[in-house]
Image (cartoon, rainbow, N blue to C red; front, side, top):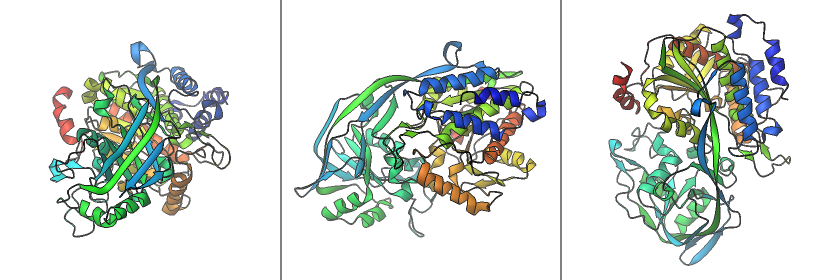
Length: 550
């Protein structure tokens, strides 16, 4: 497979400058095929395929004539990580009224510990139901009401209090309705539980609220990652994870409560935490941990007139590596659509920029590590480059570009968030395409990709994500687009079947990358500073850095 790239370069060597700025579906497919092939072993951070992945991306950047933008003038940035593994064979028990029920890992619950401790032993910890686990002063909302969670397990619902609100309920609209907010994300809930002093937290899994099934919850195979921290005990729970809904329903019943009634009560501002009478949780398991250095890959084209002003194109190179065998015996989760094609999109975008004159602003290109482990590579870069972000005009991120063919529209995650949307719409109109707002905002995809690491620091972003909703495909319309999303999400998302296949059609992905390139090129040769829209939670952050852009 490695011979694929020289052939591609040769085949396109003689094209005109204008043609060279056209994104190639064939090149997207070829790069995706290579990165999703067996020698890359599913591209796990620190895994057997990392070095080969890094080498390929660096080679492509170097061949294009990009400049390195990593540590010490190199192509990469070291990202120090802990890799944690909940050792199989632990014991987990729910007890109510003296009756103990053993739980099975991966089937009943999924547990992780992101502290470098070898053994976790929790004996008969009380369980406290804290509703959605949300504290939002600006919305006059507090699920905790000062409850003491020391030494206790917080049991929490997924999503936010508005997700299942019915017409007429006071909470309706307070958290953006069905559209998810950051309060609905599991990452936020764990962080809030730490702030509240909890021993651990279990999230009740419901497919609608989580926006993915139990198979996605357990796809990480008892493995989790975190950046290296000075004091992990201050930032991370001793135990965090998920529990199946039917177990929670039964637990409530045995404690004399009705699960659905308590959910309804949790949708009111008057909700107060409930200690489940006589209910305790116990766990005893080994936790292995390994310190590793993973890497982001970074390159740039220095701006000809305003090099200190930047535009960032990015995708994540990592996937889920090697895991349990699937029904057909496969163990490698290749991550073709998620997100080898995104990396291909970044490389193609860089190729298009290099085929034309140097833009006025600097263009950055990033291939992030550890996105699947919590956006860790992009977060680490954003932390270490925070001082530069006020002068970043925009970020375009590719994550799960659809492979179902050309579409009449672009489905936009995070629609109505910032002014880049209107700009992209104008670019799309030149190609006879339209913008479709995310039809499933309850999936919280805007908070689940690497762009969020810079968005939450005020940088306007556009996320291209084909699994956000069915595109209006030229062949089959919206119904065909929905079928592609549903099939990919149900069968292949984070699974062994996320493979490159010869019948995949990369023309739709190429068209989206083309729009991102043209929008960024237009912005790179302007003096425009896009802003967040008035209703966005990120607008005040951008406003605070306005003086640095004058």
